[in-house]
Length: 156
Image (cartoon, rainbow, N blue to C red):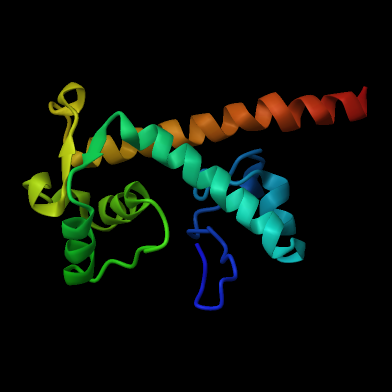
């Protein structure tokens, strides 16, 4: 997410698990070294991390939730006073809405999205939890494939 000056702000949500030994934060899904070194990174480095996180989140969401009216979704976010990064993809906005109040949404179409047929037997709270879990697993797999392999080579 960027601030008004175009700087990438931390994706931290205040639920860090890297302090207890996780290689990937269960809150923001950054790698442990990214959490530790965030303030020393350039804006370009931060943007690269932010874009990876956005790609992973959208990838996980697209098979569960379909945006049918992004303008309506933005309007609802404004009405509900849910902060969202307007410059990002609507699925990122939708995730902010689900974080803020998945349990209060009765009719997704009134918010500009639909639940995929394969997920219609799940509540939005359950879908949000599944998205968060899969987002974490995707980040963890990416870490293990690219970062973990590099660390093993350095140690071996």
